[in-house]
Length: 140
Image (cartoon, rainbow, N blue to C red; front, top):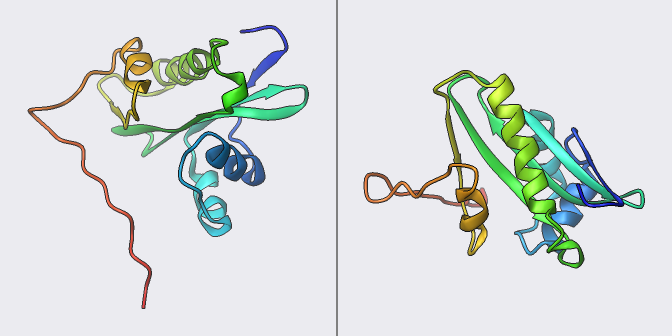
């Protein structure tokens, strides 16, 4: 880990989670979404610098058959210091130690992040499969 940074095995708190998503260029999440979702994390890490959360990553899943790596976020001012690799290494260490062999682990790679994820064994699933997504529409 780069000097001055600490990676803590904990899901970020709600305020840090919401702030880090926006500061890292991810879509914003509402207070309600964060309050409901974060307690259901299977595992999470927070990167701290000078007492402040500056990065995070989470794993969600059913604990046995399927897991997804989500919310990899790092404030732009802290890029280029190996912190993204540290986040992924911590998540992967937890998966290999605690998830059952053969469990399916997926993620969505935005832009050049695919190069980082490839270093941890992730491969494109096309053409056999294609990732699909949607946003839940607002109720009427």
